[in-house]
Each structure stands twice: as structure tokens, then as C-alpha cells.
Image (cartoon, rainbow, N blue to C red; front, top):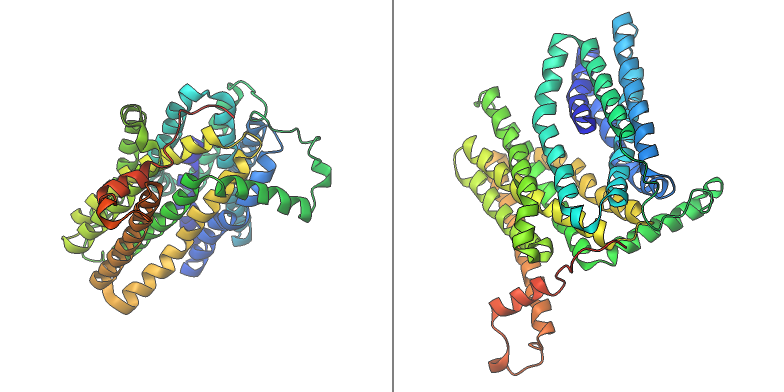
Length: 424
């Protein structure tokens, strides 16, 4: 319900800005207010979540989000809403959403055991994609009924989420987390903030799989969101219903991948590590090539369906690694650093897509994106191959005794295979 409320507000805030002023410029400002916290709040959010019980933070976030949505609804009903108030509400929603999502992962780690991590991570990922599919049309529907009703409906969603959180047992902080008093909440200074953020980044960077996953996820996120921008720029001759259906395929693919992830990882445990990244980059090359070569909108729908499936598999694998390998007192800070990168690059998608369409056109812009994705896939494949070759002594062995290319690649993909997940 929390994610559903966020996705509906992602539609209703820009629509409300347009209805208030009629200015596309203000629509952009509303969207900016929602996304700005993604760039500036993630790192301090990780520090905050690692200091306090995650459920307490989630409850506070839902209370603030519900109050903000209810305030906007009341101001609309009274005819007193101004653009400045709307921006305050949008920034509050974006900030609380970042804090909530970081705290959610910490709560999962504190409640789940090693055997249930996969199920919990899959459920969280599935909820995200279902919210994407349902939230945008729901936001448009509610806004069409009445502007004040749309925001009152979001407030009701946050209230329901708040009440559901009350039913969850308070497990305290993740294992190994020091209390806020022990870590000196009152003495939080720029220097201590920098030190604690650095500890989270170090925990993330020290895990080779997560380090590579950050690069892969950042590039693939940028690619698919840029493709969406290019597709929308060339969709003048496509009906709105077809455009909406094509975009919804990404959420459908994500739901399929996240639901099937526990079953797949049980039968093929090695896919919980680097092989998933290998599959992801090459399937995304195929998906982007389909979107570039075949006729839209169906080719685009197939492309985002494929990227949704493989992307969600990768996300579940990443979440499992974070939950199982990063200590409880650093999980939020490590995850916030990860999400800052992979969500931050999405902000570049719209301007990059716009430049490509303006300079190259829709068709050539798509071809350019395929070429970039292919170059990235080849670069990472060569990296994994070289790692496997070194690990098997192929770099120093006589040429006739060196392992075959495929053998080295497989060895490189499995060198850091994930061991059975245990709580730290």
C-alpha cells in the first residue's frame, strides 16, 4: 500500500500542478520535487535507519506522508492550494519514500531468517512491480473523479499501511546495530556523518558481486528509461491505450521475475550471483535490439517485458546478497549508497533521450542505445572471462594448455558464487 500510494502520487502531483497553473514548467517542478530526495536523501537516510529501529522510522514516514496528502486534499477542497504548498508536499513525499524504502530492507533483515530471505525479498520486489502496474492508472482514475478525492485516497492508503505496520512485531534494530544513544545521535556532525556513510560504502564496495551489480543495474536502468523516453517521443501515431499497455509490460515482467525468483534460485543456486548479471546484460542487449529493429509498439512491449523479468531476478539476487552478507549495523547505509547510484542515473534518462531524438531521430537513437548496451555487455563479459582465466592459471600457462574461452568465462562467472545465506 505504501508503494501504491507513492506511484499514484507520482501521477497526481504533476497533474495537479498542470491543473493549478496550466504551465508545463510547473509540471516539471512537481516531478522535480518528487525525485530530488532520491539524489540528496539516500545517504543520510542510511545513517538514520542504522541508528533507529526500522519499524519506528516506517511508522513515522507513513504518518508524515498521510498528513501531507491529507493537507493537500484539504487545501484543494478549500480552494487555498498554491504551487508552493504543492512543492512542499511533493518534497515531503519524496523524502519519506526514500526513508521508508531504506528502513524496509532493514526491517526484513531483522525479521527474516536465512531460510526466508528469498521469500521476503521476492515479496518486496513483487509488491513494487504490482504497484507500478496499478498505481499509475489508479492515480489518473482518482484524479479524474476529483482532485481532492485523489489525495484523500492516498492519505487513506498511507493510513492503512500505518495500521498494518502496527501489526508487525517490533524486532528492534537489525542484528548487530548499536542503539541511537550508543552511537551518539546528539553528536551527529558532518564529520561523523561522513564517517558513517563511508562505512556503508566500504561494506558495499567490499562485496565483489554487489560492486559489479551496482554497475550493471545503473547502466541497465539508464538504458531502459532512456528507451522509454525515445519511445514516447516517437509515439505520436500510436494510440494512448497502446502506449499505456506497452509501458505496463515492464511491471508485468517484473512481477513474473520476482514471483519466480525463489523457485529458480532453489533449483539453480549459482544464479544468485554473477551469472544473473551476465544473463541480464545480454538479454537486455536482445531486448533493446528487438525494440530498435521491429515495429512499435509491440516490439517495445516485448522489450520491456524481457527487461522486467531479468531486472527483477537481478534485484532479488542483489537483495539476497545484501540481506545475507552485509552486517546488520551497516545494511541501511550500504543499501542507500547502492540505491543512490542506480536510482540517481534514472534522472539522466529524460535529457539523454531528448538529446538522442533531437540529434539522431527515434530510429537512429534506438540503434545508438543498442550499440552502447552491446559495448557494455562485451566489456563485462571480457572482464569475467579474464578473471576466470587468471583463476585457472591460464594467463601464465603455455598457449596449448590454456583453458578454452567458454571454460574461462564460466569459471569467472562462478568464482564468487554465493554461499548459503546466513545471518551476520
